[in-house]
Length: 99
Image (cartoon, rainbow, N blue to C red):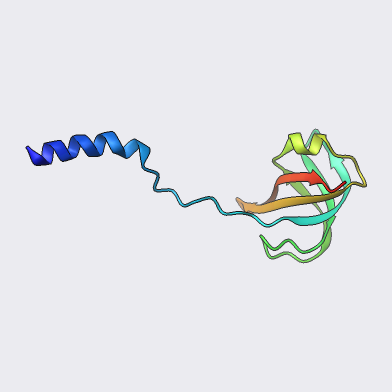
């Protein structure tokens, strides 16, 4: 009887228990938006160090997941952005103007 009651309580509680790790805060990097490819959801950014992926300063094109954020920007804007490695590619997950 006790084991059946335990199983029922566990079945009731289990959907509300999250075993996932808490989200990790990705550090922001800064740069200047050099080129925007809105159709391809890509941006070329001259950036400083990107600590989240261990990259030094350079200019390169990134895939941009945050297309809504990209729509608000124009070439030449100083920006801050968050980038992560996803499937072997570097992806900008958030981007916003520093103006």
